[in-house]
Length: 163
Ligand SMILES: [Zn+2]
Ligand SMILES: [Zn+2]
Image (cartoon, rainbow, N blue to C red; front, side):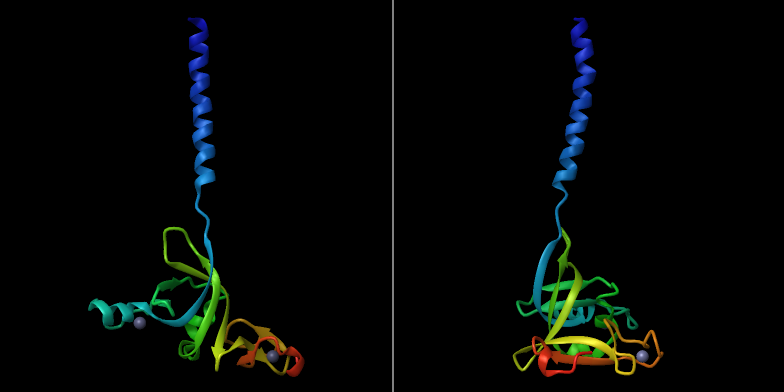
């Protein structure tokens, strides 16, 4: 009988440890993806497709529509900032490498490139005075002049003067 009273709390503690360990193991991982498509305002897209009534002065909800008609919402991060503020990128066919978070359609952009005439192009911003390369538009960190959007074919570094 004495033994039983000692064992019960011990088993409960072991049980809690086991449950705790199980929840950390089961946390789902983000999925790494490579997607082809275009950046667009998915709020406007849903308005067109499903007659969603948007507020007239709505804040754009930028997302990515893949070539398989799948929609992802873009997370605004330093690496994706250009896709939010540079409208020229909305005209391009893009390839996005990133992560999609579990049970969501949230896309974190880790790298983006364009496809032009069937050729993969690197996209970046550049100050040709300071030879500084950045991932988003704005003023050069060094000379404060606006950086310029560059689009260069990938894997042809030997043919193009390196930035
Ligand atoms: Zn919009
Ligand atoms: Zn500069």
